[in-house]
Length: 503
Image (cartoon, rainbow, N blue to C red):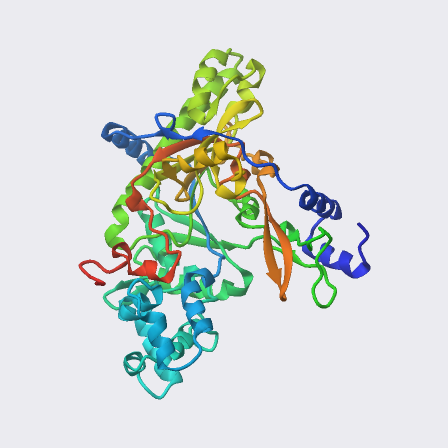
């Protein structure tokens, strides 16, 4: 591929190697091979179910842990998808009272339910204040007279609260007797509740465009929390060097209206580099929007401690074997019995045993499948063995009846609730970039400036980017999983104040 001097400058400014771009262009042409599902992971076959005795033991194990713990929260995504139905309502409104009535006449319509329970949202007070600053009538009067578009304009647009473009982490999710809290604050509080030691370290990955807003929110939060002085909050950005070139329908570099190359963020798999730079022994990972208010936090905190205890217990077993191997003892037979507990089954050459043991370890919570879209736990066929992986439907050949049947028979779902051991038995950091499988990336159709293009993402952070980690799945209660994907999810009982009703 021949690049112009302008192209080369754009590439250099991003810190991308031209050889990497050539590889990406080849990948667009050749595509990715689908995952070969062997079977779903189930209770007793890849998923641990913890008894009360297990829980007590693991919680005590975590309570006595002396390693360094950190929490890592991807938080750069905008909230635009939360407002999908509301934006469609705005786009489809053609004028007149009849159009309003038709669009919201169905009680199952999310727009109807949004306006019916408008005062149940934690951001209601802010919306009321902002609306009345922009209009000559009160919010209540606008609501009664069905001036819904004016309300949404204030809520969603930059001239008002800009909620549809802000990161989710900065939206007001939960109400505490008039004090509205963001997911950022709730993640800090949860992290404090399951910390070990006297301090909490937590890192949020954010967009540079919103860094100042996150910093301002953190300053207010820590000043309000009685333990705020013991919390260390840091921020990191998805590196521009991980961006991937976009292509047109012929797999040639896509150029914008000015003739410049277009690069796109490489998905959350790009955050593997941010994770690798953390200085910690044990790292909790959780999505920013999967967070409960205080009166529901206990169960989530309890299971965080159990997942961490399971990781520590597993590390103790693995590290003991590796220490003994280092001292010249033959650990092969014992290790072959341990590997299936680490998500590695099938024939394993004896000479590979130590290498397979000496890998990063992750313990992943799994909830019972209740029809949520997203990834799940599976045994897949790889390199002549079976390994445990978190697999998304986009990684599977859905035209293959056998593979589709295996995908649909999954009993559990990935809520993105992980605890990661990122150091080896000598206390040295693993080079996490060596343990990802580049064959697990994604290619998707997108549009830009009204033109179709193809975009590519790196292997997902907990999918292909951790493909060669040793993996344990643990069943956790569905009550620990409370994501906010659509705005009306905030109306669910678990996101409402204690003793409240949104009916």
